[in-house]
Structures are given as C-alpha cells and as structure tokens.
Image 1 (spheres, helix red, strand yellow):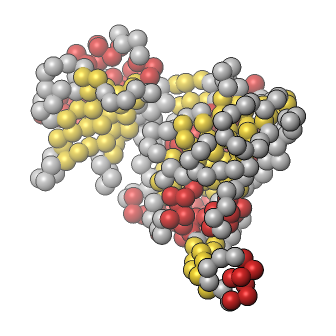
Image 2 (cartoon, one colour):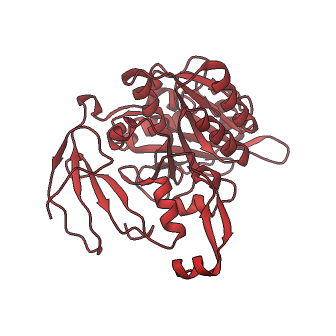
Image 3 (spheres, rainbow, N blue to C red):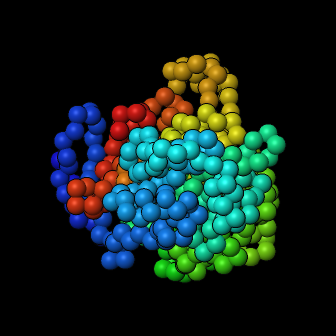
Length: 379
C-alpha cells in the first residue's frame, strides 16, 4: 500500500511507505515538511532554580551529568531530599541527611508568595514551587519543579493550527501539556499574527511576576487571583480584550467547561488542557463531558432500535463539541489525534474511530500514521 498525504495534514508532505506492525489495522504514513524554526531548543534557567535549594544540593546537581533531565526536587520535612528525572521511575536521594525546617524556610524566602492553590514561582522564570502544609498551615514539604521553555514541540501539530479550530489536550501529569501550550501561544501570536490571551491561573505558562516570560512571544497574559475564579477571567478576557485565541490550562470544573463553550460560541479559537489520559476519560467524566458535546440518554422507538440493531436506550452526543480536535498525549513524542465529533459518535455506537498517531521517528522527524481501528488501548 502506497503512502498518501493524510486529510488533516497541511503543507507539503514527503510520502514514505507504511511500517509493518502487529495490529490488524489500515493506515497511511506521511512525514511533514516543517519550517526550519521547529528545531528543538531548551531554555531552563537552571541556575535560578538551584539558588532556592540548600548549598550542598545545589553543588550536587550542578555537577550532575543528568541535570538536563531533572524534572523536580522533593523536599519533605524529616526525610532525605529526592530528585526525579525524566524517563526514570521513582527518584534518587540526594543525601542521607534529612530536610530541616530551616532549609524549608530559607527556600520559602527565595520564592514568590504562595497563592490559594499553594503554588509559587521564581520571578522571571518558569519554575514552579508547590507546598504541602500541616493542619496548622505551616509548610512541611516542597515540590520544586523545573520549568523549561522548549521550542520544537510545535512541529507535532503545526499543520492543525492552520485550520483555526479549537484543540484540547489530555494527558497524565508530567507529559508536557503546559510546555506545548506555551509554544503554541508563541507561534500563534508571532508567526500567525493572532491576538492571543493566556489565562494563567498558576503562572505556570507565562512564569512568575508581572512581566510574562519571553517564551510566550507576543501573547498577552491574564493572571487569576484564585483558582476558583478561572472561569470568570476567561469570560472577562473575551469581553474586554478582543482575543482571537484563548489559551487555558487545566480545565477541571463544570463552570470552566461552560465558559469554554460560551467562548467557542463567540467564534474564538480555544487551546486548552484537561485532566485525563484518553478521550474515553472525558466522555465518562460528567464534569468535563460538555467539552466534547455532552452525553445524554436517548430512548429509541421499536423500529429505529431494530434498524440500528441496538437497545432502545442509547447514549448520544447532545451538542457540537467545544473542541474540534482532541489530542491524547500518551508520551512527549507520541500523540493520538482525534476529530472530536466523529470519534465521540463512533465510540458511543461501540465502534472504533479513525485517528492519527503522531510520533517522532529515530531521526526525530514527525511521522503521522492514520489508523482505521482504534480501541483506546491497542495503539
């Protein structure tokens, strides 16, 4: 079977032959030709991150050959500090001595003020510090997460941005959703010349401080005083600042899902992330199902049930989905892309929808495979 350009793909394609796999499916493969600016560039400002750590940990990590893969440092009172690295299960203790209250207090003085969500940052950087408190409100643990501005992920979905359609990313924590949002913001504002507004609830996309990080390009950033007010700031952004694109991280409440629908109905492109690992997780989540059109139970007549060869009570989509595309981020370089409306309808009928598998090959080039049989597990 010869390779052909996939319908979703934009721009020039270099066709290659299909790869043999053990799954009994039909697909085509294309390798996208992308702009030269898609080269992977990482800016982590690791020096500022290490400054908040105790001196011995700072010295250890500066001389660590794996510091570029450092994900976070865990400091819990009465336990040895621990470092976690990208692609490695578990963590590694950085010393035998336990973390003291003095070390936690010193770290607190060097970071910004903790918000209602117990998150803080280091001004001018993308690093995120999250606190664990005891019952009296004192901080007894810190999760110090390295924030990196990565340029180059955009080539995984560069063709989809040309459609001007809303895109929802789902994936487990740590898979890189926020990093992708940051680069999308830069590309849409600087290359596509769109008016982009970021709803930055925890300052994770644009960094801590009043001046956003340069990684978001010309995008504007609206900060949220409390996490519970995120949906109100989303509506405020549309009503006051005339955006063409709204970017929002961690959509997690019914109010935020309704705000997304309201924004989409006003003709604004939405780029967002939600909790979940697969499309099925969103379908089954009553709080977030409105993002993919909502689910309702419908009772069919006898003749219609016989024609469909189904039960009389079935599940159907209530409305058009808020997000035209949904991308499952299985790994940082392995994504499953859905046309949301078609995939939801097929899954509710008990059928396997057509999807695109977007991944990087051994040469780090983006390869798109179009699959005709997707069960949520077999890819």
